[in-house]
Image 1 (cartoon, one colour):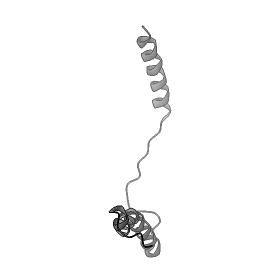
Image 2 (image 1 turned 90 degrees about the horizontal axis):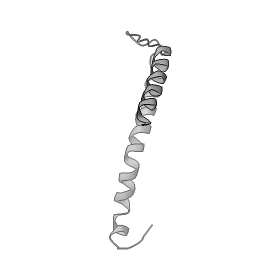
Image 3 (image 1 turned 90 degrees about the vertical axis):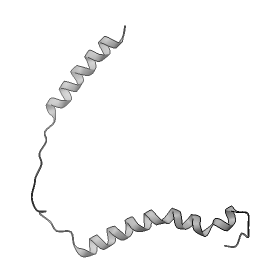
Length: 71
């Protein structure tokens, strides 16, 4: 009963949104080169963030097993 009016309203909304979108793709070499320092900093941040939780778990395995709680 309510499906048809909702579908029609969604169709009108979808057409309105899609008609207002503009898309452009620029293909070619980058206009600003990323410096080596920026690349090292970003790669380090990503690497550290990916390894933080596994390293924390490895360090705390004895506590998880019920062993000594040295910290």
